[in-house]
Length: 327
Image 1 (cartoon, rainbow, N blue to C red):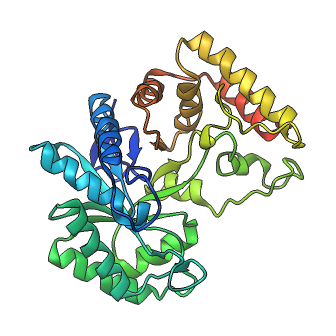
Image 2 (image 1 turned 90 degrees about the horizontal axis):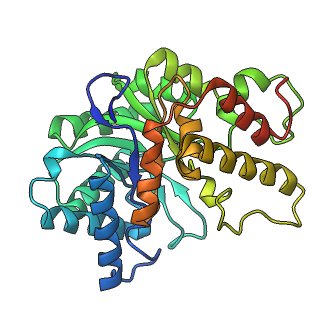
């Protein structure tokens, strides 16, 4: 299903393929032949399923995910013109320091995108996302970095990931640029953003709501929301080991899993498709980022694009995920 991003300048598939696992292992060792075979099979399957947006980050598998993707592009001449590539920067993994560091300095942003371009083997990134909010972020410095990136033609659009509406607005004002995307965690296991408008002044659900005005920013300012981990790490899938019988949330999780199975049967699609359809039902036209390496599961996921989940079914799933009836 063709999708036009809210800003109107990017036409893509509705579903995004997340390339975090492409590199195989999260270390500095080079990828082996098995990693190449699995990566190429997954990417070919995603493209064949109609997915045209591919999501990266400079840190994914310590850069190996971008490297393997670049090899795939070289082995598939002509594909670059048919797809949208986005990548993220701003995180430094533990190594030289014992903790993760966030870095939105001009030097780090420029070095990161230059490294991504080299690994991907492309001349330009379609969308550059700032990965996680940097508490030491100096907005004018980010603006200088983006000005240089734009003038050098290294990236076309600027976006963010895991940012609140106020953080986005500060960057929007500082850079004078549209922030075309915000990639945040949304799933039935992490429904806070989608229900905060109703539940923000309620004591339930017991888990804290982390709103930040993200939904309102998407609807009013045209920031395209993208949902990472929309399948909740496989939490509700039949073969998943994630429903823990020793956990207090088990009864709630089992109810969600049962309802998902019932709806999948009724709509004649996979459970994965129902989970994604719940995310995609929102009027902000959220784009789910799927990261499975299994070609069959990729096919199951894109089934969501033909599911029109009813309002009643959306609320039934939402109430089950909250663990409480709607207020």
